[in-house]
Image: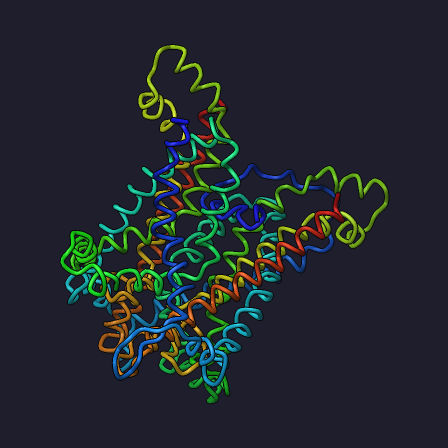
Length: 294
Length: 282
């Protein structure tokens, strides 16, 4: 189970370079074959998508209209803003829920570690579509059993199409594995016990310790967790589709019939932009690392 | 006692938004709605239905697709991870591959599906190129088939494997290799007696994760093939969106429960294998 979890929070993390072994020069051919073949496999679809979107099939002319047309595309602004808001809320709730839990478990309640770890891993193996069917069943209790009670009102309120809170609540669950792993590795890396004890001895209250000691120490992990959650929510399709809300990915699918090139342009752009952001965070990570060791 | 209360929000949240929906599946999959009186009764009708006919085919299709893609991506991902770790001046390469893997493994299937449609779909760039130069197009290959789906699945499963297995590879100490070298072991002997046994449990765990991920994949399949390929996820979506058949909702719940059970069985098998390998390692 722990092996399963190992490294899922590893994206963007950079490990020290392993020293090169001199004298073992043979056997390098398969490496180039692997890198070449898989490189081709991963690059061709991206390159072909770009070609597909910038070249007019009929006239053979090049155009960027499918990219410049994205902001004005029908429904784009709404669905993308909605996805961004959902992502922001998910990050906030996930962190508010997990930072105290991870810190408490590490410092005071090591007995609970296995339980918390197992629970946070569950969303990785439980199929999201099964989870969403369950969520749908629970939501249908409102008209069936709770009609005219405050509970039914609450159930309807979280299904508002403009800002579906139910998606936020579900996405927090989907993000748990990543957030937990990122925070846990951050807590283990820093000697949090000594730091918090020092702060407590100097008279800091627990909330103060959390804000002034724990959060700064966990900055990179928090950033990593936040970013992975952002990517997850911006790309999540299953929940939004089954519960019938329009978010960024469901919008792409909806327009693909009438505007195939636009849908490909948006897809490529979203992948590349996310990658650039992740690269930036990874670079940031390393700068901090070298500064601290210097 | 007070500190234990600090973790209460977490447990409460998980209970409401994760355990409750799954528990509800386990109960409501055994309910049936009478088509005439709309009365709810206990029944195993839905469970019986999903073990036969089109649903049975869907389960088998999903199992086949996820088994093949999981094993294939485990092998390819392991090779890629070893290759980038061994690269001599590989820091930039490693960072590029790791961040790209993070995006592809987590971003979800919709953009990937469209990238492939633009490449080897019926109007795809590569399809057109092959048609113009060789006049054969893609031959008998179709993106909108089981094989086509498998090809797209690798696009997010291989990165997932790389991310999952890199920490395990980094834990292989260079000293072990040096010790083996000094004792005169060949590269094969090192992997057979040292590297392989140490890596086996994490590789099995990662393959499990790939299987679960492929088994649960819905977005890619939905965008590519609609419901023309037999897959459980697509059948669930079909059952839920059907407002013609009474009881389709219960069928969806039974199908979803079936998925949870399949994943649970695979997890149990994995735990058993893991215990055995650990005993053997110790």
